[in-house]
Image (cartoon, rainbow, N blue to C red; front, top):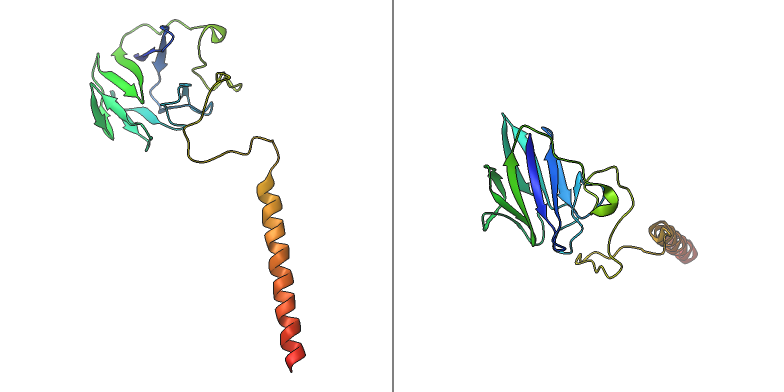
Length: 165
């Protein structure tokens, strides 16, 4: 079974089993492998199998994906390759035994089963897109207001045209 050994900044090491299907890697909990590090993009990269070989593909990340120090867009993985997502170092390997499961409370979540973010309190997003953090969907209100203003402008124009004639 293919594995990815993740070396965390805290000094901890986590081994993540790589299934035959695609494994998405990124900072968001929607990824199969969530790495909560500011240098890792929301949807950073993916590792997938093709004819018993594993490949890694960068998904347009901000800080890049590297194999053995070289920036890549897509590359074949070999036993012992160092794969870096942003500044997070990992090592690719293949073995017969499945990895030992790491308890969620002792490490960063690494599966989709974790829907609660374990982002540090002092985390600062490096994304240029700001999120609405007040929990309200202000986009719909803005759209409704724009529609109302447009309708009033249209009605005013029709009224003005009819008044001229």
